Length: 156
Figure 1 (tube, one colour):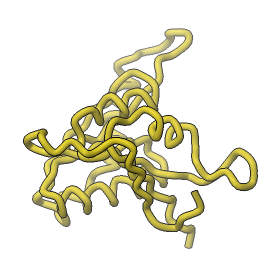
Figure 2 (cartoon, helix red, strand yellow; figure 1 turned 30 degrees about the vertical axis):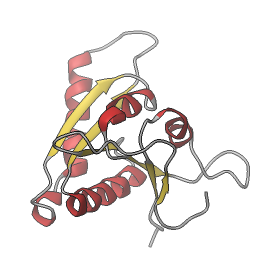
Figure 3 (cartoon, rainbow, N blue to C red; figure 1 turned 90 degrees about the vertical axis):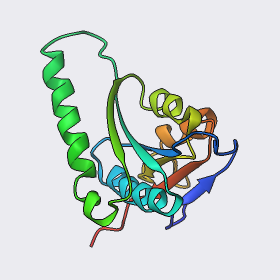
Figure 4 (cartoon, helix red, strand yellow; figure 1 turned 180 degrees about the horizontal axis):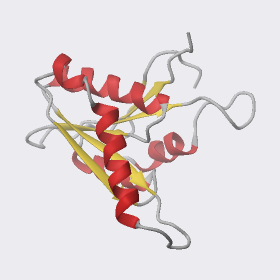
């Protein structure tokens, strides 16, 4: 994907029976996920939907340290990632979820009844023509609703 604008891939229909309707956004604190948050807020406002902001925190191979401190830090970062949008989109209700699991599986699971799932697209890595990261690629195969990929904004 070389698109400079968001791209919607529809392999499964959106779930319009959920009341209230919602969109899922995958957040990891990166610039690309912040672009996804901006996109999902606009989309949710236009569609009269809520937003589920999901931060998937992979399970450690070896447990060590204070797990609650790591959880609290991710919750803080997730809140910061969506902060400031309430003024512009006061009609959009946002919930925050930090979940232990794979960054593909958890947003896909959260999208089970969603209108769509929105994720950032970094567009790096792989061979020259490759523009999809592993999370976007995985969601295209696992999400049961449309997937909206949002490119990282160009650096100024």
